Image 1 (tube, rainbow, N blue to C red):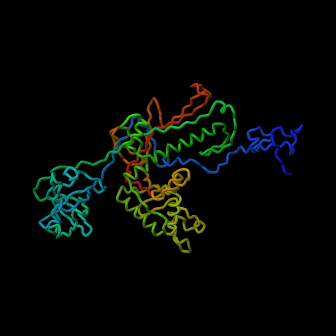
Image 2: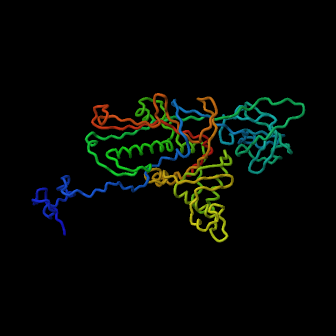
Length: 495
């Protein structure tokens, strides 16, 4: 039976509670919108979870630890390389490979690209007289002995084994091309004095500063008195009924995600803009931001565009190039890979290509040669060379409301994953004055005996315990923290 809506609230009222066409009120119509409905809609009290688990936090809890701090800055030192390896040019200024006896080289940078002064002085490198050098350009590798080190010009005199000149030794590198130099030992004549000078252990100091994150949830006193129940399933697996504080739970979960996203995405804004100086601090010369995970890897770690999913053979070659880079760094054997969906599938295809899945096929022990398991085309861990990798999808890189949206827009600079070394590193803590072993990633938060700012929550307003004249309840959230990325040279960012 068709129902025709009444023209207004008082059109043809029925004397009894009867469902008639003449007393039906269309409460969605403009004329009657907002009026009390004669028949309430059927309310489904259970909230629909259309986005699954919406939170993305948890990455740092898997790969790092948390530790309190009491100052405005964290300073730590990382060991330098043990062996002396440099990039140099052959001869000095405009000279070509020497045609006179011996030759000279000038150090340009160390093996990691760290440069010294404009002209490397004797204090900028560890090469000493009588050191045996292994030198290589694009054409040959030769050995020689250091005969002199000139502090004023940074020139290092070299005599070659088996050749009187650099040209005869086969060295063609000039001031325009690179020469790799490695100290492999020393040689002295009989009855000579010992070393003149010594090498001190090298280290590099790094620092980071915490930032303060805040958020707030508020509900008026009137709304707090109107209880409406909603059956929910929380992000952490809990379920039950909430009333108006359901929104507070969402705010808390969002703030928890913000705390983690800031540690991943934040950048050091030093020097800050004049606008931030005036708006945030009201004065000039302030420092802003903090160094997040991505910024630390881009600055001190490794970047790779490998494992792009072109084809399995290409991806395997690109992955082997990543291993070669790890070999040149700390060579941490166990690593965790947190990647987006496209990279995860490319890795699965790369690994699957190593298995024929047929009669007499080889499964490398992953499926125990079981035909029933051959349909499992996902890999959570694998070994290549001397490295073990544990692969995991990172929701933060996939979700359309987080980094996934940014990656979809800027495909050139998209972050497709990160390789994080497992285990701990040994560093010198300049505040404590001793070496400590800590995870490569760990969070430092401000705390003291008087106040813990790891994750603060407090309530103000007129609801419950009255603390102000505001007729509302306000729940405040605060955290002050920074992320410490130690040994960033062992990390790899896939972009």
